[in-house]
Image 1 (cartoon, one colour):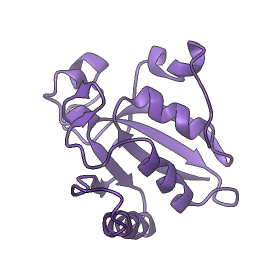
Image 2 (tube, helix red, strand yellow):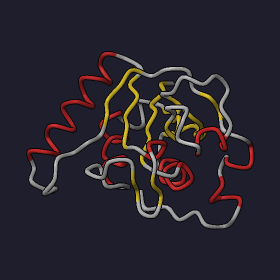
Image 3 (tube, one colour):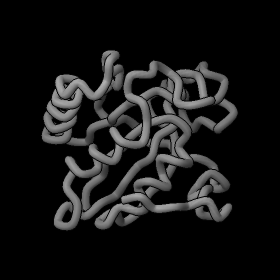
Length: 156
């Protein structure tokens, strides 16, 4: 099993999208990229911790490739929008890929460049690509939020 970590706005919808991908073993929502240890949702929402809302994806690479996960990531948000996705604003909603290996970094950077050159977006892609740091699991009521509230629909 391998891990991939993505931030693409509110983690509820991001998690729901990845739960539907064949080969994804588990997902967890949480926080990454900031300085505060063991942050709470309120801490992160303050915009003062440096953390992004992220989804940690555990997947089986014999069923799904990292490139496929990146395709889902790019398709579920606007990577040209700085610190905003839909109605959600703030640095905690930034577009970010946290890589766990040098191979993931290379693949993510190539994927971003290819997407930028494709002409799909008029504006520059602002997605950060950074090394994975400590993952802080969010409070239990955030885990599988859409599923718990009957809102999960699979597109993948």
